[in-house]
Length: 161
Ligand SMILES: *[C@@H]1O[C@H](CO)[C@@H](O)[C@H](O)[C@H]1NC(C)=O
Ligand SMILES: [Ca+2]
Image 1: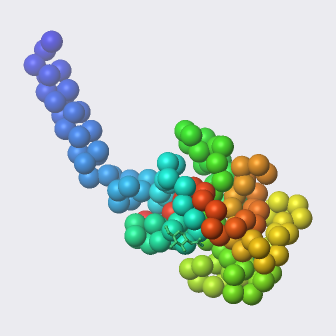
Image 2: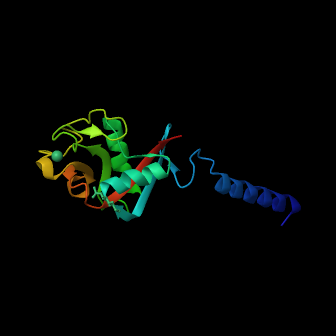
């Protein structure tokens, strides 16, 4: 091997090590870059109830999964389908109708949650006062379905870059 090749290899190794240590994607550990403006953190191992999922994201400087447009619906659907091990699980959404039955509000800003298609599965939500939380349901192509806030599902957190 020529001396110049050895130097090149050493230089390459140093760059990779730096990229790993300092996380050049602009997101703090343990987040990954999602898009232009957001970082994403998924805990694929520990199912949590709704309040524990909210608290987990807060602890990590973020907010539980929330979105209100079709582009994001597609983005998170694709993310769940393509990331290893995520497709066959339900995921919390940061919304509840706990305060007033049928009035679904986001947890972080108390603004109204969009209703109907294409977010909710056909006929959802449909369980009245017994179910006041929402998941992206694996059983319904990750459309939204009302569930019990005490049940345990997986957690996705978002934070600004
Ligand atoms: C979630 O579990 C915690 C204990 O980990 C409990 O204190 C809390 O009341 C539970 N929340 C719900 C909505 O069941
Ligand atoms: Ca309800």
